[in-house]
Length: 143
Image 1 (cartoon, rainbow, N blue to C red):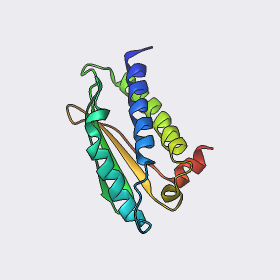
Image 2 (image 1 turned 30 degrees about the horizontal axis):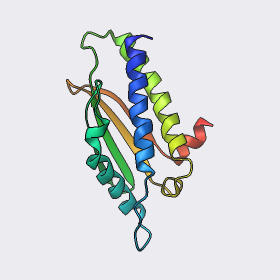
Image 3 (image 1 turned 90 degrees about the vertical axis):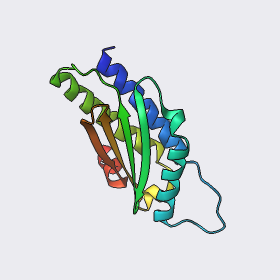
Image 4 (image 1 turned 180 degrees about the horizontal axis):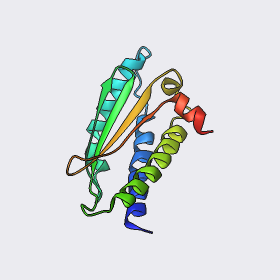
């Protein structure tokens, strides 16, 4: 497995783990609005962020923007990685991440009603590596 493929595999594992975390429901007296659900997902993610750090992931944070949960990851990549390898990494990561988020949210009622995710990946040098928006419509198109 190439370095880029190994990194993509680790990144995918983090996001799939995030998908499981996001599906954890917190019981409330009244059902949450989509905006409240997004805020709760961001809160849970941030509370568990240190458990998502590994040899590739330097940091992660989430914030709610309406019904959008924006999750940002800062990951280590080799600085001298050629652009064609970076493109390979981006394309492979995008496909895997979208499929993973769609699978993880297949039974998520909030996702079905319009909650969506924006996943942002940056290098430690603040280079934008990937930015994906995954919604119910995105998942429908992947099928």
